[in-house]
Picture 1 (cartoon, helix red, strand yellow):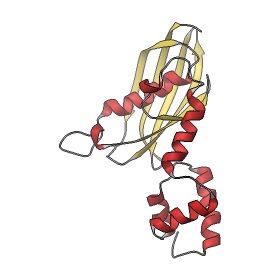
Picture 2: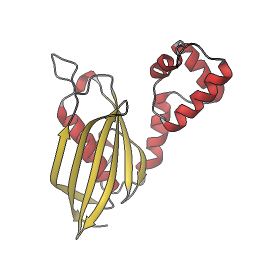
Picture 3: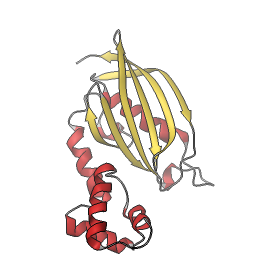
Picture 4: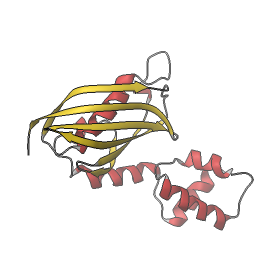
Length: 187
């Protein structure tokens, strides 16, 4: 957004952006509106919108009870939306512990694990194995990037589930995967 806007206009736009992209950071918003981070924080406070970490935690807690086959500690990322046997969304902020020692590039197994754990969480079975995974990494992920994974159960073939997962950073796809999940314990 070019130039500064009136407070009322900025807050209207802020509310609209946050409804479309609830996991946008204060830093990203301050750049977009060309105001300080403190201004964004004050706007959020006035409007009763919690900080990113609190928004993520609240969304995750609401969805954990729906997960049948995984424990919370087995998930990579936080589940922010979940409709069993249909779709799910998770969020992960890439940290320095996930990066290669000499760069700020995130190791691929963290990205894969985020996708696989979301795929497993979205199906309605107590235990399943990944029978096949077809994946493509399209862009590197760096420390500080905020990853949004979206999983969709495309079909159930015999007893197996086919789940497609896309992971985005700032609306750009960095990973896509197709998982064939084989249930080993039914509910």
